Image 1 (cartoon, rainbow, N blue to C red):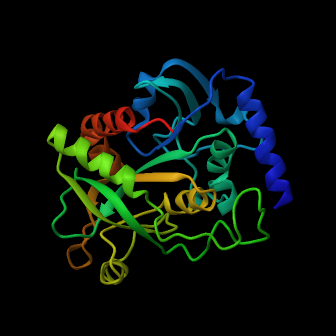
Image 2: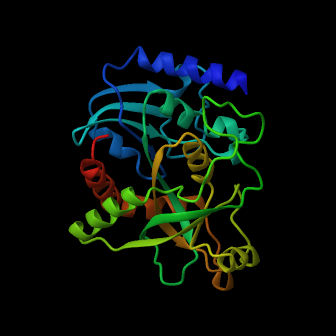
Length: 276
């Protein structure tokens, strides 16, 4: 883990040499949301492959670069493409960018994703405010020796998603006339979609949506005492008793249709987040 700390420092110093101002907000853009970074003003664009120790995004629709600059009056860092455990990366690699964000001075993290809805009241194209999550990956990015400079050995996760940021999101949704669902996100490893029995199990455990990202990043953000807001795009209905065949192309299609609403919501949320 000491090696991880050194790698974070090296990546951070590389990025710092390319930017001028402190960054206040980090945004992880999920499937279909990459275009949001095109609106960043005075942008510094850094491909992942140029950053020391950064993984490379392999998923279709993920550009694989950092976009840093002015957005809605804030200095932001946007990730166009994230990393997943199912790509073969370790949990430490998946969450490495979040460690770097904190080292850059970022205290607020917005995570977005595309996922399947298990709550029968949801519909494809709905947006869901993540209230809490279930870590169903069978592992944890904090396993191993703890580095006190990152956070405590046993971090509290009782308020993993900041109540204050959730209130901002709800007020923005009301203002925009958007129906913002609320629910619990179950994080799985993937890459296979779940069986009907597995989906019924997750629903019975209290999950409203299921996806293959977000949870490791939020755990690490919580470890470092960052404020987190999570929003999901429901791209398909994952009702175990009514399961239909699903492809990644279908997920991307719905995410793209929902994109204008999703971008408008997150854009206004960033504008409304108070400066620290």
